[in-house]
Length: 211
Image (spheres, rainbow, N blue to C red):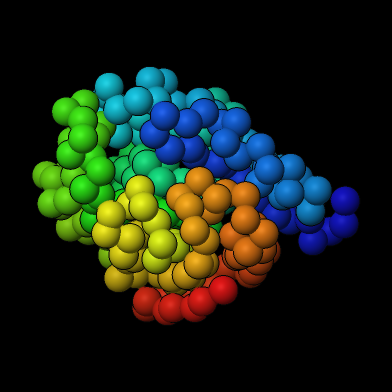
C-alpha cells in the first residue's frame, strides 16, 4: 500500500431500510481494491420497527468499539442510512469523528413512500416529519464536514427525488434508473471513489455537478 493509501481514513458504510451490509458488496470490494479500509455493520432491526435515532446509537457504539478515539472516519450512508448517519453526526458527536460524509439517495426531506408504513422509523422519514424538521433545523452543521449528496432524478423510492438535495455541501447527480443501482452503477462507484480520494476542503456552499 502506498503512502497516499496509508493516509486515507477508514470508510464506514451504513445501509438503508430492509437492507443489510451485504448491499454494499460491490462498493466494498471496489473501494478495498483501490486501497481503502472499509467497514460496515448491520442495523437491527432494519425494517423501521425502531426510530432512526436508535439506529444511530448503534453506529455510535460501532465507531467507539472499532476505532481509536483519535481516528477520523469517512462515512457513506445509503438511503435511510444517510439519515441515520446524519443523526449520528448532528446529535451524537459524530461531527467530531467524521471528515468526509457522503449520502446516496437519502430522503433528507422525506419520501411519500414512508406513508406506506406506521413503523416508527418510517414515520420519521415522511415529508415534514417532526424528526426531519428537527434534523434539518441545523443542517448547516454539515458544512463543517466535507459533505456530498449523491442522487438520481429517476429515483422511484425517494419521492420526490429531489428530497435527496441539500442546501449545504456538494451535490452530484448520477442519472441511474433505479434506487438500488446507486450502489452498483459504475458512475456512482466512480463518484464515491473520487470524492473519498479528494483532499479535505474548506466548508462549501452548495455546489452542483452531474455525472
